[in-house]
Image (cartoon, rainbow, N blue to C red; front, top):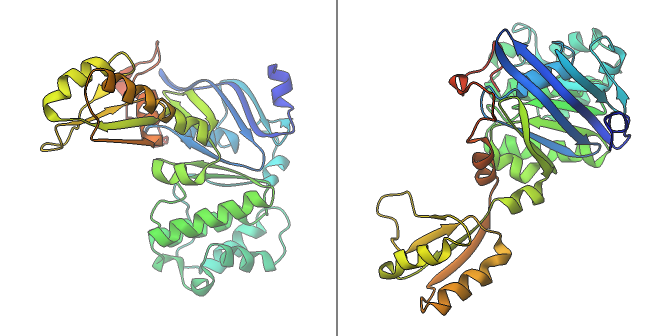
Length: 331
């Protein structure tokens, strides 16, 4: 698909092509190409300083890119297109509120400053995020998790078609995370699109339909979550400790073999980064050599893929800033 066709594809809620941003000599984004499908939850992942928050700020018009093209909700977009922003809800970084106003009063003030919003909408979003019972309390008494919920409520005020959330699970307890997950899924079930930037890989693994992984300002992997997880498959086998070295030599032709990193772990346990469907090959190779398996399990996890893809910097990037964000970019 050409760049022009992608930017006008009605099936994509967000498209970026060649998106670039620098802070002085520091590269924040370099040639970022995103494809966020409509009606899905898109998990946007990357180490600290990888450019996630910079990307979100560009998408809501808080900063301008140096290079590249953007399409939002099927049409080309730039920072001057303020009316399009009425169709986008966002929570980027830590939400700020008037501490001496109540949660409900804060929402009413924010609603008055945006597109026309029915009065009942404030109570609807308070219900949606589980804050109705604390709506009359002053925000200065809210916990971090409650402020996060109120921030999500702000993002929902205009009943947006597209929701951009930066670390929405920050400060939430386990019950709050589950409730947030159910809320976001209900939004996509209604046809809305959600982009979630997060460092909690386990949550993205169960929440997202599609995942994009960014490192050093460049997209290193993007695709359906099940496809991404398949790339992170591992096969774990257990052999007699006396046969371990011979098993490693035999299996090295299939994939690198890892040993347990925990002191005192089972000395006969081996792990291969290999698709689960290839477990029969492992069994055959060891069996032909007279090494009998005492156990075999398969598993897939997002962390394996994430660490493999973000471990090395792309050519041309300065690694000296790894883990350090440019001004204001902490995600």
